[in-house]
Image 1 (cartoon, helix red, strand yellow):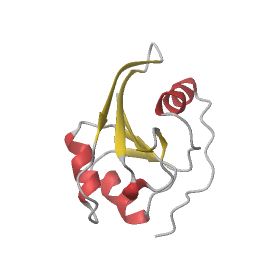
Image 2 (spheres, rainbow, N blue to C red):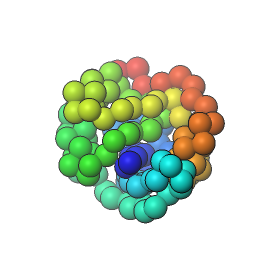
Image 3 (tube, rainbow, N blue to C red):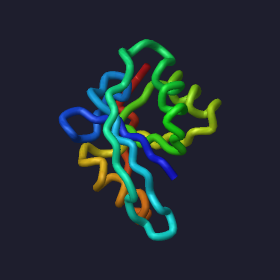
Image 4 (tube, one colour):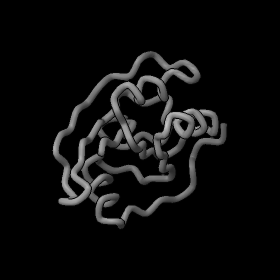
Length: 112
């Protein structure tokens, strides 16, 4: 499984479309561990471009602080699961909590 997280200053970005980089973490769901981490700079932000770019990275899940409804719909259309409302933390800590079933989420901070 491959998980994508938008980052700002190496922490989860609260605004999905305006992040500096993306962390792509390949995980072993059975062993509940991170196998590989890769940081990539996304293409310049334009409506609808990030879901297509992330799909090309073979991502199964996006964990974000906040994400607009249109982006969520585009991910859904491509078969990518989305979790919003995740707290600011390192991508590794967030993914470890997700794998352990202890990731607590709050409100989606995006309202567009």
